[in-house]
Amino acid sequence: MAKSAQTGKTKARVSRRTVKAKPKAKAKAANPKATPKSAPPAPVFPVAVVATFLNITPRRIQQLTKEGILPKAERGKYELLPVVRAYCIYLQGKLMGSDSMIPDMNFEKARMMKLKNEKLELELSEMKEELVPVSQVEKSWSEMVTSAKSALLSLPKKLAPRVAGEKDTVKCHDILKKNITQAMANIAKDGSK
Image (cartoon, rainbow, N blue to C red; front, side):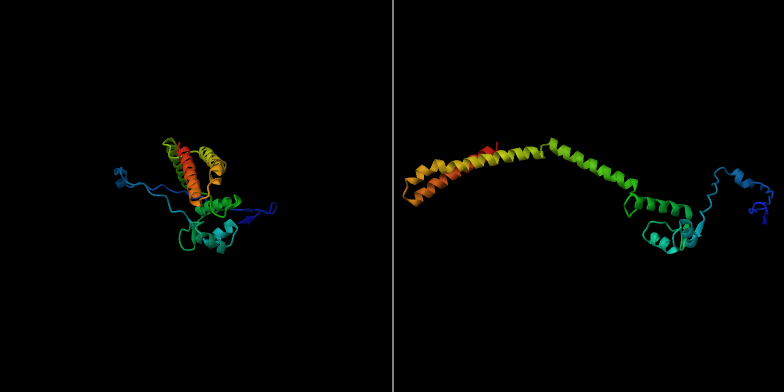
């Protein structure tokens, strides 16, 4: 290579060779079902080259490979394009606040499908009256508790005169038990409506 004194840049000499096209074999031309040649395999690079390219240490490349973040082509060798893509996705995930890779779209679609199915099942259960809104349950329980409270608080006023005249404790006990049982039956009947 020759250096130019004026610019200090290196000029490269390019040699051009003429390449003659090889004549195609007649056997291949005659066979229209011949399979086309597959693309050449992607070049693989040693870990040191990939580490230099990504500006990280070779040890960090190995750690990310062990964690399943970077794909490895063969022992100690990596395809550059898949590694760069995977590393970019990893860094994007870290920027978004997670230490893992960005969630897979298939995973997200499956999660959304599951949520939609659960929502549909809940709506169907509600239509079949297997589910009741919380507000309706709260209202019913509030009415039942209020009814029970008023029924039980009315007992002393109602029973005091009847029990006060009794000298026999067994009769007092029977009067109280009968009225409490009747109040509970009324509460249960009101609650079943």
